[in-house]
Amino acid sequence: MLRAQSIIIGNHPAVYSSEGILLPWTSWKDALTREMNWYFACPLEHGYPRFMVMTFMDGNYQPIEKRQDFIPAMQDGMGIISYLKYYAWTGKSSPQALKFARLMGDYLVKESLTPDTGRYPRFTRSTGKREAFPQPADSGCQADQPYEIEPDKGGIAGYALLLLYEETHDKKYLDQALQNARVLVANMGVGDAQHSPWPFRVDYRTGEGRGPVSANMSYILRLFDKLLDHGYAEFREPRAKLWEWIKNDQIPNAAKDGSLWEQFFEDHAEPGNRNSWSPLNLARYLIEKREALDPDWKTDARTLIDFAALNFTSVRDGVPVCGEQTNDKNPWGGALTTYGSVLAMYSAATGSMEYKALAWQALNYALYTINDDGCPRDETWRPGRGGWQEDAHTDRIHNYMDAIAAFPEWAN
Image 1 (tube, rainbow, N blue to C red):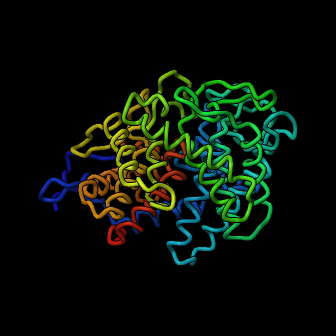
Image 2 (cartoon, rainbow, N blue to C red):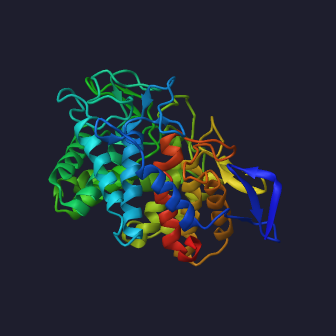
């Protein structure tokens, strides 16, 4: 083991093996425990830990004043998934993890919905204002217009709430998951070579769309599949149509120009802005379900992984890392850990080790953002504390949980 004192990755001196492989600065279990404990100590705001009600929080649990914008569906939806997976990993011995998952669910159900009118009534918001209880009718921000929502983010929130219902049996989470799913079905269009079944952005009052392609369809598919598992047969036909488009149009497009993988991030609206998050998260679902979802899952997952690797990877400090999108190829925490976890899952599922070392190093690289006290940073490539909380924390923990499930020895 070599400690390269002249190379700082994130918040720590880099540690490499004698072969030049990046090693973790401490064990994964230790680093992740520090991070979770730091968040468990987060002060409350209106009954919710602050990181659940604001996207931009500094390393002292304080809001970053110049950033009033907030992404509730993505941040708290992926946070629920992260906290439930962490809770399971601890053998359900961390009641605080389940409590925090419930608080994120409560925020989504009570504070983040559109009004009960229009084409997308009582639908989870993609963007809003920090510390708003509840969100006002015109709270859209970042690249959303004041009355816009993003249908795919309602899929993320709905799926997360359904997982929370399965763990807690609290019917309010099921009710909101059903509401999101039914609104999505009511507004579903026909996907083709230039359009996804839902546009990227929609005015929730009128249904007017903006952006013909929304790359992230896998979480709507997850939501429909999970509701079918619970006996809601009304989702069988829309689910079949969505999967037909994903299988026949979207996945093959990854081996072409990638035009069906444009648009995912809330703060971007540029035409042609492809992203890594959406194809990698579809690959994750293919790997989880395998033949039950797609008889060609190995080939299709490989196509999606290769698309992300070809278009968004770079080398930082000797480590291949994955960036977010065409217009920002920096390795933010959510995108990088998504890449590492999906590569690990593919390696474990197929028995092919070609991606294992890449996954290990990418996840080690992101681990260096965690400070000694557990506070992480959103940007993996430079030191600091806090920032965009989805990249710093809520969209990272579940990725480490999936990688540990693939290779349990990595936790040590």
